[in-house]
Length: 478
Image (cartoon, rainbow, N blue to C red):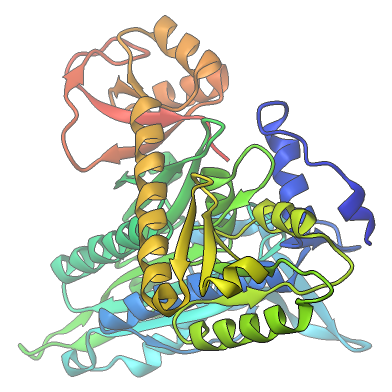
């Protein structure tokens, strides 16, 4: 038994940050390494990421994008071609200065994002309007030298997908940017059971070099927001910096319009913090590494026959659901129940000699603890139905939490009290002045998460009192 198995999980209500680290490590999702700021994603955590990747990749490809892979290293001269972009990432860039014992003639950046290297290649590939739109996505790793790190949420190296597209017109680029934001929104809600708020980022929070940045924001169980995906309209900034031009139908050479968009392994952190329970994880069935855990109830006389039947059940179901059997002799059924509940498996199947005699199995839902007796010949239809119910119930529960923790305030004093005592999203008017935005951040540690697409009303600015200020979403965030 490992040291982690002896450790108790700190309850959410006692210390949410400690709870988060405890469940990630004890459930064997990830662990620290000897490299500062870097983590190892263990098989159980990586299985979750693979499911996230598979479902999102399917959605991305349905919109006409194709996957490619670009180099990890970016020559310094390329990175410097777009000054605003370099300035935005300079503090986080890791540099390679030597190859073996030889000093490099030019430093190589380990990609913090791929705009520079991809744009240098797009300038070669895009020559005519017939080459457009160019719709490419890549799944890759990224390095950003973070000062403060936390497993999955913010690490020096992390995994992500980044889409990079090229278009003829500003209208097409804007349509692409919003379309991919909506892909993230539907993915978060339908596959991860996480409701999100979509909108535009302020100029202060905009991606370096972008014309506009949009984001989807989710609310964690502790009342903090988490940016769950971003989509950037890059305008022509990078096209002009990297000379991405095309000959249009009117025989006039023009600069292209571009977008980029991405999500990362911080989505795993979002799943954990939205759905986690007081002393354990809870994974939405659509992405759960294990959807059903089968636990035999064993006695000496009937042991072999129960295990034989359980193996048949698992073999019959494994094409329909992600199911595993826990037939370890060294642990009691009760211990296994607790272990797999802590690991967030949404449904448990129990089979003992009495069940076998009655040609049935017992199914136990993690969310309601409800036990249902199901004939063996109906498991193949009943289990997917129950998993669908659990998925919908998780989304509804998260939606209720979002609604209950989104508040409108009428004054700065009320805003400060709400952010401090209740947290969550706070709707309040903002005049658009970055100085007012900065004042709120300095005094309350809350930031504008998004300017909503749908009009939320107007009022006097939270800080300066200017009239006709638009209502935006504020929150403290990870």
